[in-house]
Image 1 (tube, rainbow, N blue to C red):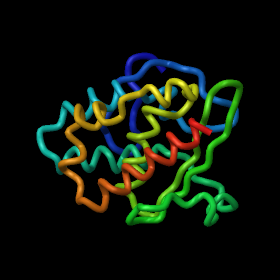
Image 2: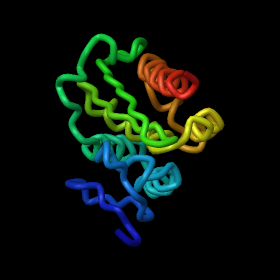
Image 3: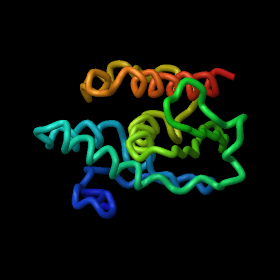
Image 4: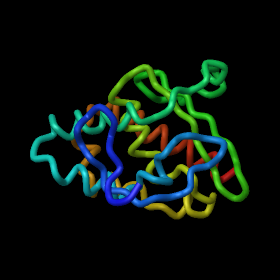
Length: 163
């Protein structure tokens, strides 16, 4: 797609660039939907209520996780909601499949995957996720338990990139 990548069903648009999507995943976060896209899109909204709606709509963009991956081993510990995260390596890049039982958490997973999905281990380790969250002004608008869960997701991905 040129110009804009639409968030289906939301009426919102996320500016995006065309990128190759891994054959192993249909997840567009990190490949077509980037951190810059999310920062730019969220900057258009005046209220956090509208930003939350947008984040929830981002979660709708995540492909469904195969139920076979909804196992204890794939659960992310430290999250208020149930979150499953599976990684697959393709060449020198890591791709992630995720799911949650909460709409807002699915959206937060999209925000995180925009930073990490389809990246090399080195890119994942070097990315300043805290600066990204600060730019989004995200953590101060989440409950402490949601913020802790978000950090748990990040730690799990970083640990997978370091192994």
